[in-house]
Length: 140
Image 1 (cartoon, helix red, strand yellow):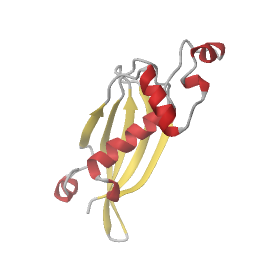
Image 2: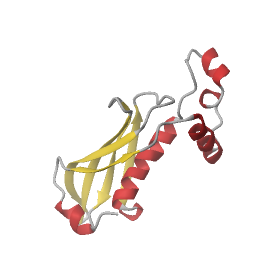
Image 3: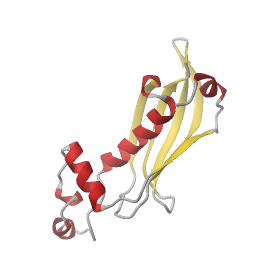
């Protein structure tokens, strides 16, 4: 977790530490399905995915969302998180190695509390964004 002093020193355009994850495997999807309770066949049943027009199963969108949540809370700490918004922009396929990154887009204050707005994305190894979002964290 970053210290308050470091957060206070960040300026618009500064990046936060990236989170690189291992490639998505069938085991990743099975473990996430069990943990989340999301057993939709598009994510775990190859035959179903092919019948639906896909080449193979693919990752749950909320798995990438969880990675972005992990990026922010691992960096700033859960207690500093004030808001978190995300939008799905692509499909994360088997073999994709998610890389989560963020940068400061705004410094502002709410009711006397200094805050940072962080633009974030979870992209594959080719840099294709699969989910984008923003987080607001308190600097204190």
